[in-house]
Image 1 (cartoon, helix red, strand yellow):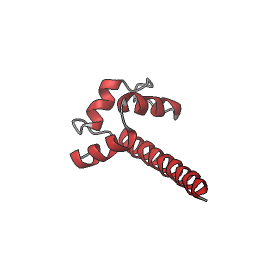
Image 2 (image 1 turned 30 degrees about the vertical axis):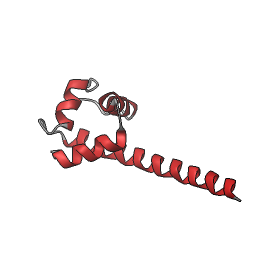
Image 3 (image 1 turned 30 degrees about the horizontal axis):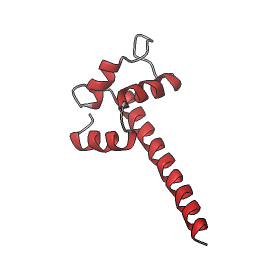
Length: 88
């Protein structure tokens, strides 16, 4: 189950429209509900808020947040590199 602290950290990394982004990630990775349908935004929201437990979706949410965190770090490294080159 996702704790409130984890939820806060996830939202900070993913940003706005987080449920829509998570839904797209789940669909892209073919993570479907037990009845073989895509997870609804409502269902994702319940899991993200800790109201429902779903280990598969929770793990996917953490994987997506980790992926976004790495992307942001790489982007920051590129920005820093460009700024340092400008100072020379």
